[in-house]
Amino acid sequence: MSYDVVVAGGGPVGLMLACELRLGGASVVVLERLTGIDPTIKAGSLNTPSVEALYRRGLLPALKEVQERSMELMKAFMRKQAPAEGPRRTPPRFAGHFAGMMLSAERLDADDPELSGRGPAAEIGLVPQQQLEQILAERAAELGVEVRRGVEVTGFADDGEQVTVTTTGGPVHGRWLVGCDGGRSTVRKLAGFEFPGTDPEITAYQAIAEMEGAEHLGVGWQATPTGIYSHGPVPGRILVARFDGGAPGRSDKTTPVTTEELQDAVRYVTGADVVVKEIKSVTRFTDNARQATTYRLGRVLLAGDAAHVHSPFGGQGLNLGLGDAVNLGWKLAAVVRGQAPEGLLDTYTRERHPIGAWVLDWTRAQIALMRPDAHARAARAVVSDLIETVSGTTYFVKKISGVWQRYEMPGGSGHPLVGRSAPDYEFEDGSRLADHLHDGRGLLVRQGGSGLVGAAVDGYGDRIATVTAAIRDPHAPGAMLVRPDGVVAWAQGPHDLDAEGFADALETWFGTPADVPAALG
Image 1: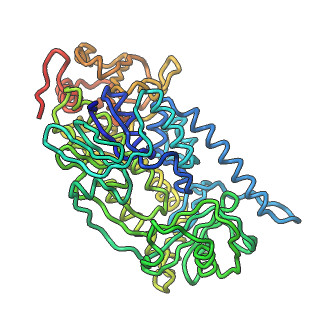
Image 2: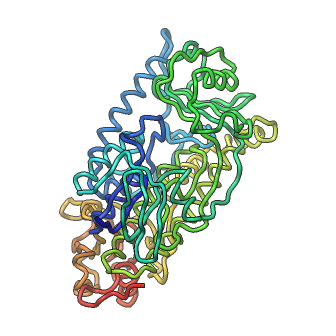
Image 3: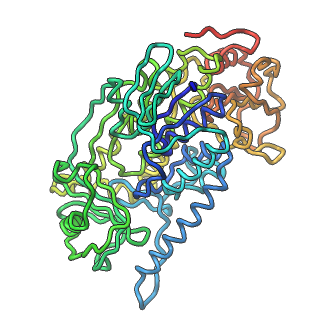
């Protein structure tokens, strides 16, 4: 059997991409080396664009349920750490961290316009990677995505018309191949993508472990003369980073981490005589930071860690990969259906590569401030002072949350919303914008006073839904066109009439109407 798209890698990025492709009408198979969800401790939170993407596909209730369970674990940890006697202080609301310097929500400017208009998505964030993967696996099954576990990609051949993928389970044929197979991506290496970057400075460990002497560790992030560590916020969780140049003897992910190795790192960085009794989950990582120069070569594309690797500090990795999947999925599906030329795929690298490059630099900056030398610690003190101001906290939270992200749009109406994630406007019937994006189509929103003619979208019904209703926000545009990934492609004021700009946006992002054949590039 031949598929429209073969996805190598069935982690959250591969599953998210597969779901988006199926919503767009593409047939897809996911090939995953592991036989089940990887239980190793990984990312623990989602940023705003990630939650918005999942919310727009109807998955907010599942995320809320996971977050509630995660909050209970955090509360249990904090109760255990509280003093047996004396008053118990309520810890400040956590808003993230930069280089291990905590950001308090009490110092956040909640009136900042970039932090408003996010709707229910703003209430979600604490979703561990394994639980997200389970949610996406169930969603993929509902959509009819074929997931083959225990199947490893070993090679492929791209003949310009289709890709034949060699696997441990036999050959698989597809029109396109997307590598979502992690930082050591087989697809990236075999395809010959350039992968420049910077070498590591640290060897770090994140674990859930049974430890004796952990009561002597500080809670949260702690800088020490030999590195930096974080204890909590769930029982048994420890992260330590030692600045040893990513020592080859300790940075090989293929070698299992022993209790002795983890214990040595914990003692070296914390200075406490902790005894690691048992490891329940552990991962070893460095700050190796690299990015593919392009995300597409021929019929092969990359997403997630296959396209970019960096340290996990600041919680950007999973979110960056999910953003790749949401950006690519609807575009590749449109090309597969013949509703858009292959040139639409050029916008994938153009839009996502700059954000990936920013993330790499954001993590490099944190490593620079985590170094234990005197110069780095002096710079850290300056940044810490800035973080303790309202403007400083707001700046860092906006960066970490991803609300700053914007794509440069060709042409465009010049409206400030164009290129940004659409606000989750509430309509007069009580529905919200996200409610109208569940099926993966684009959305045309028209308020009653808009001069835009609804007939302009005739022939796009399979690609664009239309809502004609008043928005409960006096600052909302009179009309706007939203891409399937929730990004505003075009907008105009309540009394403007930009028919030419609207037509250009329609053709750029949604191809030609159904009665006009699209030219395949």
